[in-house]
Length: 144
Image 1 (tube, one colour):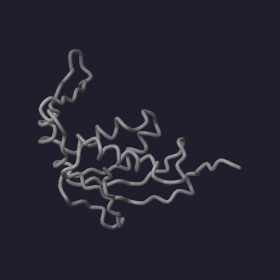
Image 2 (cartoon, helix red, strand yellow):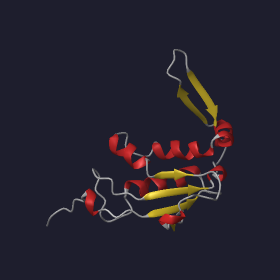
Image 3 (tube, one colour):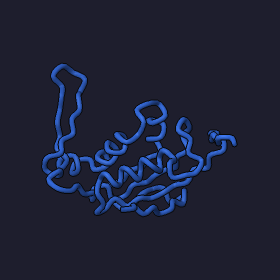
Image 4 (cartoon, one colour):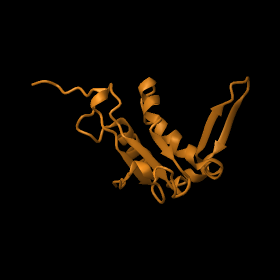
């Protein structure tokens, strides 16, 4: 019995729409990461990008449980000496809700070239509208 190894030319990519409104951030990010990596397909191969495109809508309405909305902090560095910066979840959600989902999904992806390539298939929008109707995306229901 041979092990199946997917080839890049054999992959047919689909588009999925995920509505983040009212869903916990971690569940949305886990579902998105699974689809981007291709783990929902039987042809999944770890060293090949077998994933599909994902459109996340209503990013501004994603929820956190417990006291995380008030205590969760995002840290980044400007690149200058003493340039460490902190921003709270609530501030980032008001300023740039797309970034909240992108950061959560990025943390669930491989930290290499392949992971960066897979992240390019993620499209996040703050409201219910998106410009990808021509790709005929299918609705993906979040489990759990």
